[in-house]
Image (cartoon, rainbow, N blue to C red; front, top):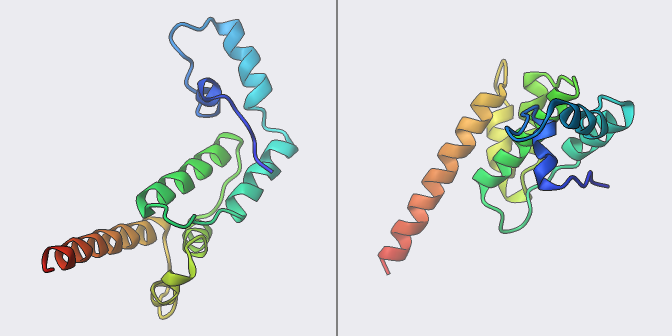
Length: 138
């Protein structure tokens, strides 16, 4: 189940009023689309907890979508602690990241979302460089 929101109304979720919109219209849209109801909170939580990287998706895009989900939850006043964000991001990755995931999890005293994101982006950059180097060697 997904929340279907026209792209023009996405600003309501991130609390940015378009310049050409009057206040009463903004208030109406905010009431409809950015309400902090139980249903909205649960749907957004469900999207976060079932979020998985799609086959062929770029890691940077996946992380960006994950961050968007976190921001949407924050906008409806749902706080996900840092360690839980980190483990949710790691668990959203495909099986091919299993050893990477285990390396980050085991033997640590703490795990932060920013650390996991940083390590993933470094891994992605190295993988891309290695891939481009191996293609040029042929």
